[in-house]
Image (cartoon, rainbow, N blue to C red; front, side):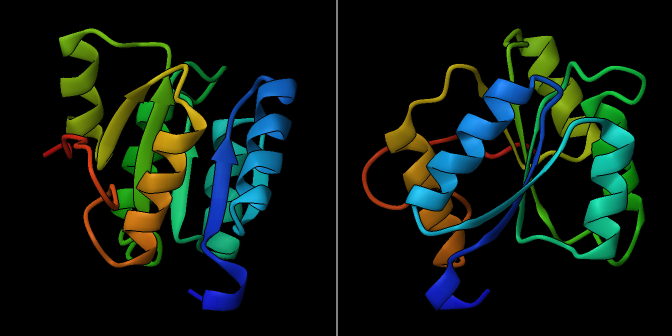
Length: 140
């Protein structure tokens, strides 16, 4: 990570408005964000230029977020990336499935900007997630 430019974050989200809003918010926080609108495109982008963090929706068409996580974890080049499920699926079974697929964290939408900022600051500091007060349960 280049401290001057923040983290490199890949947003994998099929809702264009949501993806662009998240990209803009990440830029305000000082991070570089790239968008992929499909799971397959997200995997391709991550392999081409591995980001520090992937924020991935689960309910993607064709290749869902679980498959994205499995693909990224299976590739030695992308396996170290911090994977965060950012999804509307919030049941315990969804969290377990996300952990089994390889996600580090499972966050249920909507995720507030303050929480996202602290999460990324924690990653930037090399920690498991959130910087400062608060607690997110890592998966696994």
